[in-house]
Amino acid sequence: QVQLVESGGGLVQAGGSLILSCVASGGTFSIDAMGWFRQGPGKEREFVARIRRSDGLKYYSYSVKGRFTISRDNAKNIVYLQMNSLKPEDTAVYYCAADLQHTLRVEDIASYDYWGQGTQVTVSS
Image 1 (cartoon, rainbow, N blue to C red):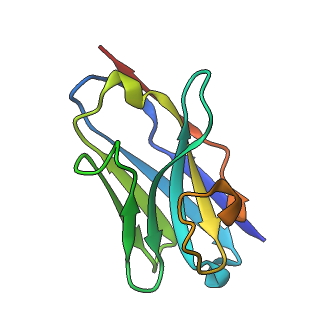
Image 2: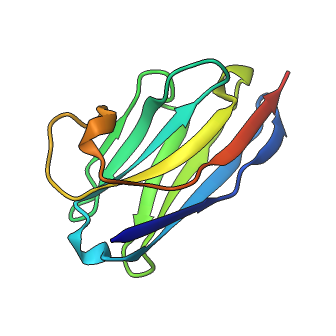
């Protein structure tokens, strides 16, 4: 079992920055990659970013590439999401997720085995 706890959400003005953290505990040795997803009001949950635990290989969605940066601290079992140049359309609940197996379907929700409870990010215009 893997437990994930997100933190760092909040209210920020457009153009501002936030950094989200996700602490993993439990069977962290079994994690292949960590991802961030988000779900805006009335929208489906969507992929944001992913980082592979072993070599730091990263993937980003088109909508956040160049503005968001995913990083990891394996020693502390923490994954970060640095969010810059935030836009109102980035408003969502952000979820951390853990994938136990290598996959090419990095944006697929079904590829992830464990999820955090989410943290709210609100960007005002």
